[in-house]
Amino acid sequence: MRKIQMVDLKGQYEHIKDQVNQSVLEVIDSTAFINGPEVQQFQKELEEYLDVKHVIPCANGTDALQIAMMGLGLKPGDEVITADFTFAATVEVIALLGLTPVLVDVDPVNFNIDVEAIKKAITPKTKAIVPVHLFGLAANMDEIMQIANDNNLYVIEDNAQAIGGTYTSKDGTKTKTGTIGHVGSTSFFPSKNLGCYGDGGAIFTNDDDLAHTIRGIVNHGMYVRYHHDVVGVNSRLDSIQAAVLRAKLPHLDTYNASRRNAARKYSKAFNGIENIIIPTGYCEAENAVCDVCDCHVFHQYTLRVLNTDRDALVNHLNENGIPCGVYYPIPLHLQKAYKDERYNESDFSVTNQLVKEVISLPMHTELDDEQIEYITTTVINFVTN
Image (cartoon, rainbow, N blue to C red; front, side, top):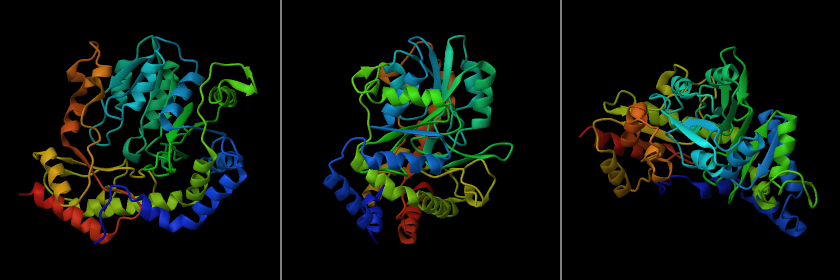
């Protein structure tokens, strides 16, 4: 059996090696390292793929979130509601801009922000909601957009883990995640479903005026060289990373299909096992992965293990050559940087439980049946003994 990787970037690279190498060498030969033709072409190709009017590439996913908020003109003291159960970057940028983070609980089934908790958290100071499409599954955007419309709020989608995912609205409309709210952001960190070989990110919007503002912000506030019209930052996707992303983008749907296929095999093995709760989308489907939609792109395959020492399971897997992750071991509201006397522990019952139970198994495009069988057997033997 091949060595099991949490993310097998080398195996993925082997399939696109010639194209990646040629594209990178062409960038080096051109010496157009910043905002070169590869960046501009990638922008156009991603716009077409996402069916969105504007893609603005930037340096990383955290910058993308921050710049999206800057573009909306949010002011210090404005409240921004987001999920307690996510990576710190989501709340980090809120705090960096002098905005007020308002953390709320998540849904116990899909791990995404709880729409009822959003409603309870809205105050006269609330200006925006940041849903995170956690682990590759879209948040409940129908409900979130309705809440935003009813309360005159912005919606900023954190799409760092769900690039290529499709959200199906109640009316049957299918839309790519990251393009539903007023503005969306993503990360091209190497381990993402669409990842480069360094750092990278992008912002998405269908709003022409907002896109214009953001294009200035990412480039020191300039639209004309040395004319600084808005307060900006230096956040640009470099041409070599754009070349890598251009090579990968045509394969993204195949990559996501491979992840769903691996998830389907995981879930089939775990189905019916006491003490294991498998991840699910919004569709009722056999083995928790729908065969007729793209609601989940499985950036992570995350189990809940009940009545089990989760940390002991982590150690057991590692001892048996199986890498795994705990995303996330500490709620944001208990992190030293984001503690706030406004929060009541009773408002975070789901998150406080999830951090004790979740474990993410290897998930990438190169997983094979032998590896999946070994991983699932090792997990099942531990939780059933």
